Length: 292
Image 1: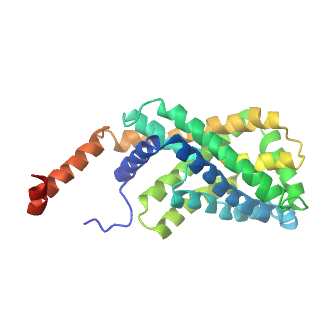
Image 2: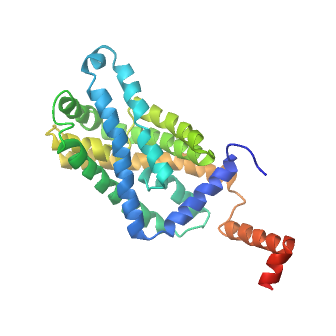
Image 3: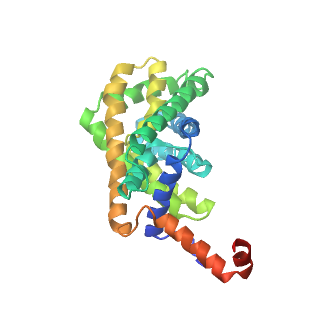
């Protein structure tokens, strides 16, 4: 019996492909509502980040790096809740679905179908949280939070160039997918939390762009009358960060296929299951009698 606390890298790669197969076979309505809840969970972490970062104007003026580290430290709670509850987040699916398609475990059309459903589910959950649980409940409508969010939109989506947001999106999902990889590799809850926490902490503190996280913070800034318009948000931030996140996910998924799945094929899971059934039948006379 394997008593190690983590899966081997090849086992993690297989587990991720198996996750994609399960998600592919899940009804689309369930996928959509899991994605809605994932958008809400990630927004909880985003709100926690805004409360710390926006609520520390004097510290931001004197030591902005510390504020970024503190805000980044609390944000990962969102992804932890998503992983532990089994919800659907677009950025992790950007990694696992191409892996499964390359190994012919799922059809190619599963990629656009799943990504589209999960994208809009994450968007609905994020917008719901921004409007109801951040604006209309009054949490973010007064200073220093409102002023911080409006200035955040400028530095996040207006000042950077399109290509800069794209590159930041690559770095973001590279780290997010590493966090998901490590979370899958850990076998018990505390290890999963720690494995997920640190890569997410890094991406938030560094200011990389996560397309779903931005679905909460940037629309919230628009609701609070920032200089960012909806049109500019979609054309510049949303599209650039999405493309960057796709590339970042491939930076983790494609090497995993190359390193660990070279001799794995779509029937591998079924073959392994059939082998376990045959072994159980031959080793247990009672099973053999019942199935005879």
